[in-house]
Amino acid sequence: MRQISLKFRHALPLGAIMASLSASCAHVDNHAPSPQVETKRRDRSVQPAAATPVINRPKAEESPFRTISHEDDPSLVVTAQATAPPAPLPLSSAEETTGRVTLPPLPTTGASAQESPEAPGAAYTLAELQSLALANNPTLAIASAEIGKERGLWTQVGLGPNPTLGYLRSDATKSSEAQTNGILVQQTFITANKLELNRATEASGIRDAQWQLESQRLRVLNDVRLRYIELSAAQERIDAVEDLLALAEKNRDAAESLFTAQQVAETDVLQATIALNNFQLALQNARLDYEAAWRRMAVLVGCPNLVPRPVVPFDEDLPTFDFESEWQRLAASSPQIHSVEAQIGIAKAELARQQVQPIPDVTVQLVGEFDNVGDFASLNSLIAIPLPIVDRNQGAIHNAHQELVRACKELERVKLVLRDQLAASLRDYAQARNEVEILSERILPAAMKNVELTAKAYEIGEFDFARVSASQSALQDAQLRLVEAQSKARQFSVAITGLQLTGGLNPASIGTAIQDSGGGQRRAVQAALDQTRNGNLNTFAPGALD
Image 1 (cartoon, rainbow, N blue to C red):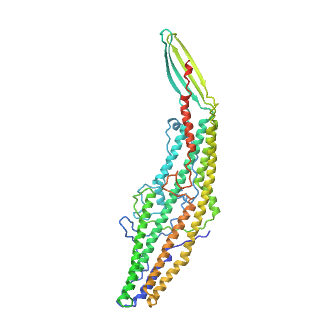
Image 2: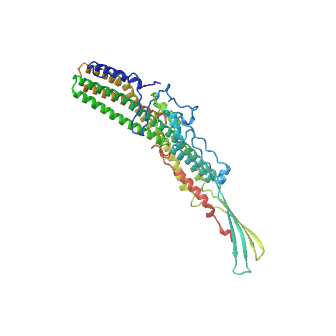
Image 3: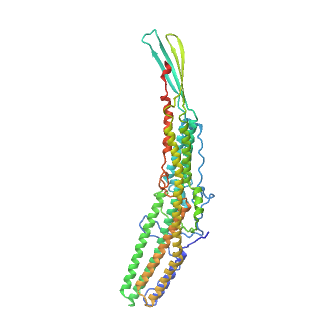
């Protein structure tokens, strides 16, 4: 696999360019200032509005952006295969009896909402921000609550109907005929394993909700990664514009010195001042971009009041991807595919449940009475079953069968959509990667050489300052385009390695456009639950008292 490692800092020896330009102007006037050549990068302290943090780029000995391993923190793995959720576990007997279901815990790999890196003012790393997002992003709590709801339904649909207990009294018109008191007990027995089939349906529902939680976890991690890249690129733009601003200041000073020595016209000074003002405006805009990028990051991690700090530069290489290899990985690992497969399991279980619905449940009724006048007791019994003559549940069976067909076709659709998204992501990534190569290997070196040659020509009077300003503008454009291309390429890489999952602030039920709302099987389960719940009253037979 070919790797491209672009070190933006080492590709821009602006100090040498400034030295050349300063030297070319130094001999013009003995009274002209002689600026010292900067051989080291000055402290890049951003001075925007009060809310904008100061950017002092750290120098890491090695890139901290290696792929996060399971040994570091399993929950922070972004590019690895999606973690399979555990199989739905049956609830305890206490949960079945009381209906109180303990909600599954949220991922707890993150820190508290206001927790910061170790040293005050230390640069944030990607892993630290991902940890904060896992601990505080509300969409994960929403997805976890959905699992709790499904577990509650799993408990409820497996519970049989309650027995009915009643008191009976009869009074005759003549006191000598009869006067009875009695107790009625009635119980409906669910047949054909309907309760077990109800729970089988909900077990697949729990599995679906677990995959939805895993999808949302990856969305959050991927979005943090995307915004981290955006934040790092904003820092790069500030540094690049500051370098060009320093060069423009030296050009303006040199032009003023030459004008004082009557070697250039005042128009050169005006041109240099205009160029300086343009770079000052570009720096203000770059700082505003950084401020907005930081605020968006703080919102995503669920800590809108998080203290702004710089981030460690994002220096990961740009790999090459193979479509078939990436598709095989995506098809095997995508939580979205696994979620639809769980929905197919729901549809299959619901079809099996509806097929046994016509089998009658049995209602047993016992009535014990005592006649106070005749001084004797009696016991009446009744066994009743509904006859499925007209309603054989044929409509619900047909509906469940079509739901299964729909779920199977939905799986095909999701795979096609993911394949389409992968193709688009690989195309966009390849284009951005090619732009990075051309800019770093051809355009940027040529722009730097052009600035140097233009400065020398300006020194001997061959060019006016307009040519110098144009060369510097071309260098600025090349630098900023390179930063933007690197940012885009890395963002497209996240879409490829992150299983096409984005939308870290959207609910898991929305996510991206690929997901289907479903819900038909949930309504069917609830309808079956209501039918079971009301069956005890529907089959109540007071005729047993006659």
